[in-house]
Image (cartoon, rainbow, N blue to C red; front, side, top):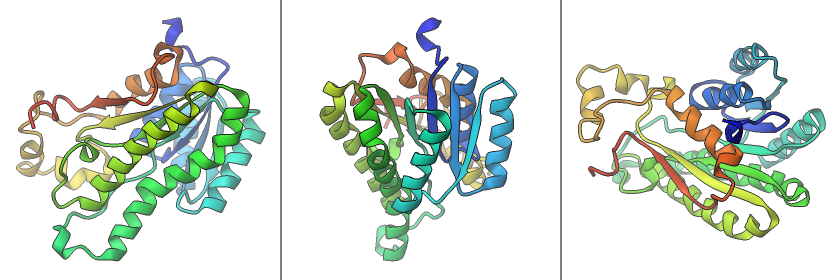
Length: 254
């Protein structure tokens, strides 16, 4: 189990106020890491901070807008200052608040989702690049989606942004590998979070959405904790540029 131990390490997690981001942040704390918690919602971050501190780890709450590079750069500098250094970077902020056929898509919606799901991760990686490369160690985890692996009908901007994030993951892994910095993508399948509650709570749409997956159920956010700790820890020390799919067999039956 020492392979999964994060004692003495520090992490920067975006989208940490709820859902998968909160689960990952608390899992890191359970494994021994101190965590910088980043999101727009200070209230949500406070709840995550309580969970981190409940296991005697440090929680640095940083409320910021990850769609602004200046705000992200300030948040990265604050995290490094307060934690001393950052070992693990998790780009989890993202989502989609609409589903529409491409022919009906407003371009403003396209721009908004690309900014949230892709540009935010670019900003975070750029803000930490010098720090990670200078230290010669680190693990970057980009939370993508199975929507980036195949067609994503009615979710074209979300799927495109996640596909681009997977491509960015591979490119950064190739560029940063020799310096000792690993970059991998975590690809969840359909996960029951607050953002898609209207889908998974619907007695008809919920089961139909996952009917073609091997396990025929939605994931809970907590089921992303183990894979995230694996990617952050020495258990995956020779793994970089990879896409870890955690989807209950959704993609194998597609």
